[in-house]
Length: 349
Image (tube, rainbow, N blue to C red; front, side, top):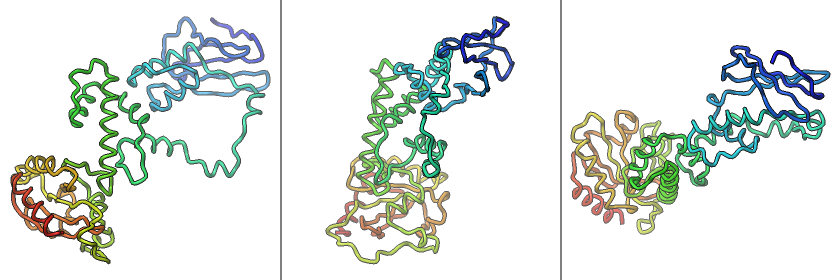
């Protein structure tokens, strides 16, 4: 095809932006096909030049491999192409490439542009940037739940479908979900999403930060630990622990107590305590928030806690501002940990 034939008031000339191979599509009333020259074998993104009687405009079709998952899904929706059977990124990219080949971009006429409401200056100011919205959505499953957050099941499923089967199996094992009977990837995705939702609900109702799971040991950051204990950043900056302005009623403490393991990755006794602490956590369940923190990563907090040896187990009450009840330096086995929690629980009441 060496000539561009006008079939109406609108003609689309398409060129590859990389190797400049030419392709053409015609309308009226809208595009039905995009045909490359017979000599063209490239699969690069195309630049669509819509040529009318009076003007020309440029539209760039982004390579699906460079697009976000949500952008691919959005374009498929605009093209009225179903992707319900696409369970990973590769299949979505393939579906979009097929859709572009079979259903090229529909031209917007001057009449349609005139009928489209234009945003006012105030609405442009109030509307967040698209990049901000995308970043917020993409972080849904990686952020810890806050007090008002809700589990975004649709976004979680979309992200899980991007993972390889091997990774899904590893995550299912982490969530203690048996996957041996699953024959399809989608079964793994749905099972993992349900497990993540249950854990989200449990952690949200169990801890102040929404990051602590009942029956498990959570390796926390300084910010999470401060939120769980109700300590102020300003006090820690001054090298002291926050003290409650008003003492809590011991009989009606608002939160479950905290057992904190202060450890170091190079510490042999710390490594010995780790599985014992996990076993104790499973038995204690929702009665105690069990956390551990790396003293090398968070030296400032280790100093505020006056850590002199490793490992150190510190028990805090469940007040709005947690107070230390007792600490033990050195390795404890499961029974010793349970005895410590029971003893401190009696002392706090």
